[in-house]
Length: 218
Image (cartoon, rainbow, N blue to C red; front, side, top):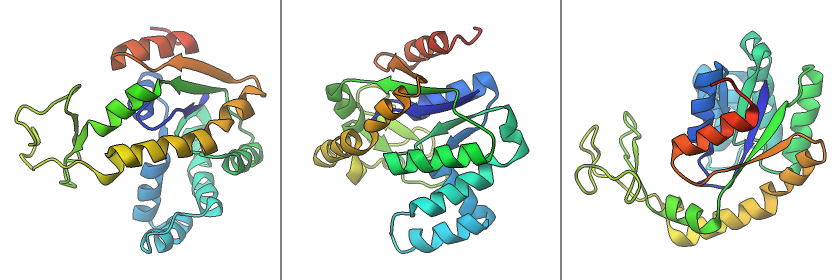
């Protein structure tokens, strides 16, 4: 099964992808994680990506596609995979379709994790992150508060409110998603492979809906 997750920032894609990957025994391919891994391994695409990342420049689409080619060509991907965070726009989606065709693969289903904008804003603006790179724990002032206000439970580092989690930036991120990524729902919908899942509620409730939608054995 080859699965792609779509959903606005704060929809819970990462959480649900990880849970589904564990249940199905499939690789979870997060674009951010893959970039870091490619750079760490020093692959051809990783070296190219690092040259842009070091300058604070967005990694170009052709480099991202080259990176996905490296990972999707691995034998362990033959049983399936879960894509998270890529593609983000129509040109990327078209490039991914071309790549998958080259590799004799195709997407089985695209999950549209739908959540109201008000909840998305509440989820993101309430996040607090541990800046300790050895930890990287994430909390929420309402949904998952640390035991001691503003302090990480795991390493006692003072938590931070990331700049991209602040209200004005969150609104812009959601606008960007609506303009660039939401059209992919129609793009894949025209291929008949989109399934929409209600992303509101506790993570376990959302996951229950997800596995039922995918008809995965409990």
